[in-house]
Length: 184
Length: 278
Image (cartoon, rainbow over all chains, first blue to last red; front, side):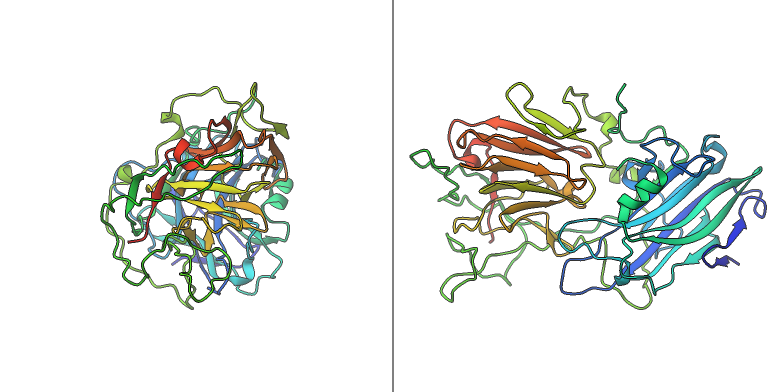
């Protein structure tokens, strides 16, 4: 049974699942449709070092920059809007954590904010589809929020853990980039 | 050595993205190149083609009324047909429902869905944009990296018109507050046109910028100023309309180039494929 986390909660991944060496991070959400332009949700990842900051200025990874696995693949959960696989054994040693950031695309034409987003979540599964962890983002997000750290995958001693974060930024992707010292 | 932000992140071997199943998009009949005749005088001519070519077949748009040669871009009086819109049902943010519904996704080969990797494109010598700059004959082109090409909007001030083409082969001409814009407008995603005039500025939405093949931006008077989401700028002198700004999508990036033109006919000069509603 999956661990359902609340913001701030964290749980061991590899310690409790020692045979799992590849994980899948899935992201889902719904957007309330209105008459105006749609709110565009964009997930991304930031590779961080021990100091909690990006290991390099170009460490903000858009998901369309990531290679796809060879061969036919299915989503582990059909509800997910995005999925990435993480091979934890080959994560470089200078990467202490992978921070998953979801932001509202800052189009100048009424970009919207997280107040129109419902049922957002991040979950970590095995590649065979077994859900290990799930964090459901509360639906009462402040209307000022235009970017959010959903959660982070991080090293703890010899193991990997996941922390549910749910931290919103009213300064959007720019604010996130400033905090993590990454270029956008 | 400047950091290379352009390539697909082949160094990120520990993350792999599972591609989503592609959604179907409607196709519209496109014509061959329709070069309108250039108008006389020194003023820029943004006239639409006068002879629509034979339609090659395509989507049944029976819910739309037949096109008319001239479409007013101002609030349409009763006698004038309203502008036609292409609505591409490709939004990444579908309407909300209290609980998401799921449908089984068929197995497919991810290889067929892979976009062309930047690493597979030929190398180029165009510099990447870092600070405010002015395009010139000596430095006519600049590249936006994948972040600059993917976040927020491009805003272009000073333009009078732009011709556009999508990767799916559709094209048209938009004139700021003019009556000679093409009947087919740029496609919309999430109820935003991928490019449009708003308050005398061209707004290019980068979230779906990969659908654009190119834009040709023209002005006969004012110089052009292109602004990125971080407020940095690219300035281009138009030299009384003899220079146009060519914005081309190459892989994950946009290239901004100043082009000299012999005539003020941007559709004909650049062989823009104009689309027509059938």
